Each structure stands twice: as structure tokens, then as C-alpha cells.
Image 1: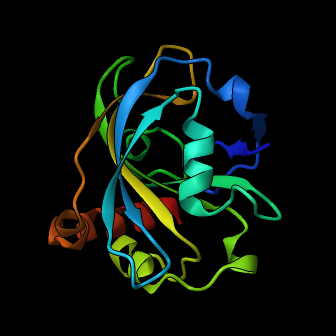
Image 2: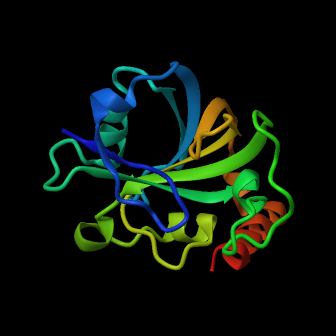
Image 3: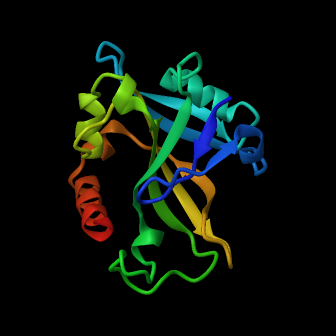
Length: 182
């Protein structure tokens, strides 16, 4: 059974069985799929976020279905909401009020890929990560934080293209994220 590693800046390792993860609204989700095999093109992957097959579909795309470890790692690449949190590690502005909608980018990958998978140079370049292993799913989403909740709630997904990841605007966001979270 796959487990979900909840998002965070320093990749929290909180494991939840996939049925618990599915206790939310199902949202159509467009992910950009960056395969680790350079002979395969980067392409869109349409999934049902929060749906009954979401974890299995992610496992299949990332090649974890029959893998030895099978852990999905989620990592924020940039989130406007966390840049505005009043914690010392975030040197941002005042936090957004509850239920404010804001933009976030997230990558999903094999959390143990660095031990078991080849270097994915395309993903490392596009995501401005020093090293990335295995296939990667990337999403651009609109999220909110409910009152008295720490975790963001995904409201909807927006289309993300390879061109956007290559853009100066995305590069600037990644530099901003790195400065704010290190």
C-alpha cells in the first residue's frame, strides 16, 4: 500500500494510509509529467485529486506500483501562502486571512528515488532543484487555508506547461522560495 508524505518545506515524514487521504472532495487535476526516461516526452497527466484511484494512478506514473519502497513524496516548489506566514523561517509579509485563495506549485516524486532511481536531469533543470531522481509530477494549484488548520486545502488546479517552468517568472519564484526557506 502506498503512503502519502504530507507537503512541507522540509519534507515532513507523516505517513497516512491512502484510504484516509481520500477523505476529501474529488478535484480534476492537471499535472505536468516529467518522465525520467529522456526518450519519453514531457506531457500532461489528468488525474482525479482526492479520488479513489489517485494514489494508485500516481504510483503507476512514478513507477512505484511494483517498486520496493512505494512512498510518494510531495514537496512545495513555491507557495504564496507559506511565504506570508509569520514564522521566523519565512521572512514574508503578514499572513493571508483565512480562506484567502493563493497560488502554489507542488512536485510529487518517489521519496526514496535518490537511492533507487537514475538522475532526472530534465526535472532538475525545469524545477531548479540541484538533484532530482525518478519521474516527477508537477502541479499548479489554487489553495486556501481554513481557519484553525495548518495544512492547505486544494481548491482547483490550473494548467501548467513546460514553457512556464522554463520561464523567468518561475525561476524568480524558485529563487524567492529558496531564500525564504533556507
